[in-house]
Length: 89
Image (cartoon, rainbow, N blue to C red):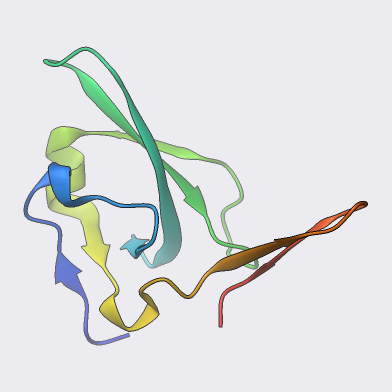
């Protein structure tokens, strides 16, 4: 994963991209809060060391979040009657 690109604007965050934060792969979920104090939610992809959702403010997103262009739109979810299966590759 040497092709990491620092996120330069929080408005460019999308759910179809994969992001690297401190070496862990995350998917962007949503933003919530007020205009001045917006919080951005990220969920780790399956089989990562971390399992809890991550909530960052704007400044930390601009300093710590890197986009992984080679994994664009490759995490998928398949839903059946009994389970949900997610795939990274």
